[in-house]
Image (cartoon, rainbow, N blue to C red; front, side, top):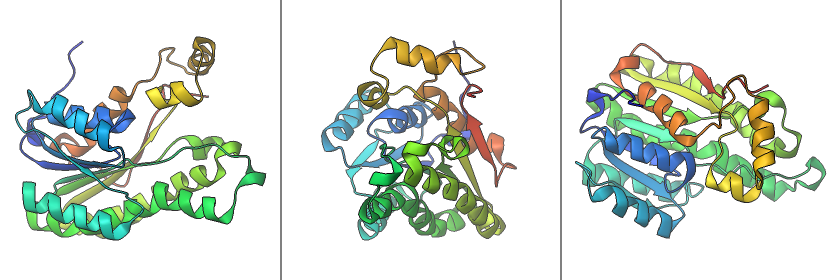
Length: 255
């Protein structure tokens, strides 16, 4: 089935965090296929390099991979500076990097709580802060922050993660108001039960467990990362140029 392409994304510099695997990798593929100049950050060196090689073989603009720990804000800011030096000012930022590990509330330590906020929330703010001058210089920009439906469901075994993802929506709305006068749009996306390789490895190990999730969806199909990536493309492209301060749920109607 053919899907929409977005000419406005051609040649634009796009920065994606957590882009080496899962939804992030699908998003890297989607922007590269639309002719964007993609840079992506991840801790997974081997996976990131392999994805860059795979896409670089046929892409109009081979993607740039850099290993970066987004919880290290100085390293994140330095990486964004490198992207500007090598590709140009960032026009699209996709804050995707996250860690959705599960822990009973009683087992959560202060150190784990702080880590969960660092990896799921804090870098969204500082990455947006760092690319704001790029977008202001360009006269436009789009920031897409990854939230999650976990906070709406009150996921008991993911309390630190759910808290951070609720805060991402609040941050998105605040940044949209702050950056709007510079023609910079800021939106959030709330994916549902996306069945990635990581999800299969850790939590959905059997077909029966996947089927159980699908039966809770109004649309009875497995939700894939590429479907999330297509929504990100739309929010990044000029087709959505009057859409800002929104949080869009893509969950196949999970209930």
